[in-house]
Length: 458
Image 1: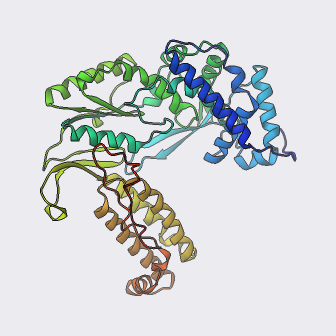
Image 2: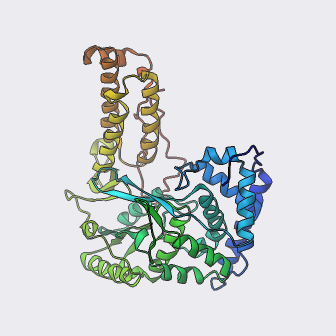
Image 3: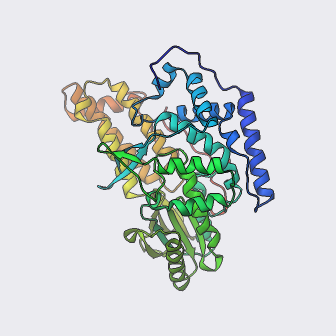
């Protein structure tokens, strides 16, 4: 990208969005109607102007850090969005486009000491990746199976969690849990290209994917390239991971139990120990065929029984419990879930960070709003569970931290801070999580409009 220059930016109107959606629907229906069809004319759609504009909107919405060229979203807007899209369109048409290596950073995993490697492509490369995803995702979405939930349109972690509740209710109370070791970095390029070639025979599109895979990452000033891996952090990487793991989904048989896969996190719900042991052996074999391995420390067989420890999945702890007779006539056993210890610790750590002593220069109103922003997001995910008692603990912890922050800011004792909090008609603006929980029910969608919740304070 050359020196910034003033340039008008063309927006994406409803007609552009409708045209892109129409293209995606057409590709999906064609792929669904003929499972053996291979698509040969896709590259011209990747560099279509409305597709590139839609890709830019997605990249801008997700924001994100700059790549190795240090170009930010703001830099692109100053340079001129239309100008950059013109350049990308020309480079793609003339086959001159070459992505930069991604910038390697490490981010801490919540509640753990280990760090996750993240690869950050340049903004211009993210736009092209998003355009590529827009075009090829509908084709492969037509092939993906109901057991797959991660990074798919109109599917979410709560859909996977609901499947676990349903299968447990139906008697599958032996659980095989595992996590694929270094999944994103272990995917073999040749195996991935073979999976893509099952549906795509457009050499230009396949070449574009291969160019992204070979771009490598820059770490400590050196570019490293590998024959495996799709960089975690790339726009198209989750889709490529799903395309590769769809081979596992297709090879799975119901005789081994119900597979529930969210990207590289896997569960198998089984009826007895024998079936669970067979499922684990089969899972290990299928992963080995793909050049992947289960993570030993996260692989185990769990029996769901009263009084026994359960398992963690997608941030929730699952455990078989008996209903409280005070809540209604009769008792029954059901699979309950609430935020895992790691998720609770993450919430406490985040609230502590937002209210730490080093931030005493910030106004209380600003700190409270930042705490509220975190609580809304955290509770928005975990509210779909039996989480009331955990929410109460987190609410009281947030109250304590805000009260102490207020007291320290005014150089007063903690009792003074609590007095300010509880005497305030609006609790100093701090939201409450009371009445926000929706308990899951077997064979009832978590999206069910009958599952309503209170608003809490404010």
